[in-house]
Image (cartoon, rainbow, N blue to C red; front, side, top):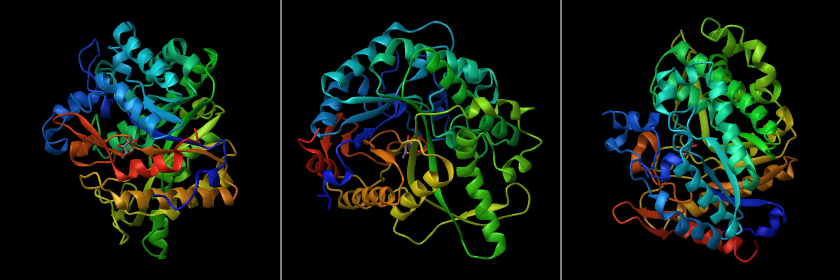
Length: 437
Ligand code: FCB
C-alpha cells in the first residue's frame, strides 16, 4: 500500500495508466499497414530474442477486459496511442475503416466506463511506406502528419479529453537515427539532425491542423532525464551540459521557446535542414499542457574528442530490471526546473514506472511508485503546476528493443495464454483510488 492519501493530491488531480499501440495491440491484418517496427523487429539482431509485436498483448481483441482493469483500478484516465498504419495503411491517402471502427469501439468503451481518453498520435509506429520516402528525415512528413492529425480530430476529437502529438521526440530522432537502437536504426549525423528538427516541425504543424479541426487540450510528451556530471571537473561539467542539451534542452527549448541550444546547433551546423530557423514559430506553437516521461538520471563524463564528446556512465544507485537507476529526486528537480525555466502551462507526468523481474508480487515497484508520487507532491509544494500522473504501464508489454523480456506492467501478462493477473502494484493503486473516481 502507498504511504499517502489520494486527498494529498486534491480532487482535480488525474490518475491514469499509459500504453502504446505497437506495444500491446497485436491485431495485425484487419487492413492495418506495415510499420517500421514490424520490419525493424523482424530483422535479426535488432530486438532481444527476435521478439516482434505481432501478437503483443492481443489488446486488439481483449481491449474490453483491459478497460475493465483500468476502471476497476480506480483510474480516471487512460493514455493510449493511435496506430497511424491502422488508420491510414499507406501513411497518406486511403483510410482503413476497420481501424476507425476499432478506435471507435475503444473510445466508446472508455467513456462507458467513465475513463477519460488521453490520446497520443505518434508512439513510434511509422507507416513503412513513409519510411520508404525518408520518414522523419523528409520535411514533407510535417504535412503527412498534419493530415493524419486532421483525420484523428475529425473522427474522434469529440471524445478525446486531451491529445498529444508526439511521444518522446528524442527517441524518435536521436535514439533511432543517431544511436541506431530503435527503428529505423540509422547511425548517421545528417539523418539524426534532420529527424530532430522535422519531428518538432511536424509536431507544430499537427497542432495547427488539430486546432483548425476544433480539437481541444493539445500537448506533446517529452522524455526528460536529470542530467548530472560525473565529477566537478570542468570537462565533465561541459559534457553534462552537452548531454542535457541533447536530451532535454533541444526539445524543451524548441517547443516552449522556439530556440535550440547553441551547443547542439553548433555541433550539427552542417547537418541540420537548411533554413530551419524559419520554422521555429511553428515548432513553438502555444500548447495547452506539457507531458513529461521520467524514468531515471543520466551521468555524463568527458568522452572522446569529435562528435558530442560525451560519455554516459552508470551510477551506483539501486537499479531496476532494465538497469536504470532509481532516482525519485530527479523527478521533482525536473518538474520544478521545467516550471521555473520553461513554462507555466499545466504539467502532467505522462509516464513513470519500472521494469521488474516477472511475478505478481512486486514490492520494489510499489516502493518506486510511492517514492515518485511523493516526488510529484514535493514539486507541487515548490510551485510546479502538475495536474496528473500516468503509470507506465497498465500491462506487461513489448518493450521495444528489449522485446518481452522487460516487464513494466501493473498487471502481469502470460503471453502464451494472454491471461492478465493484477500485481501488488495494481492493488496499491486500487487502494489509493478506490471509490474516489
Ligand atoms: C518510454 C516509452 C514507452 C516505454 C517506456 C519504458 O521511453 O515511451 O513506450 O517503452 O519508455
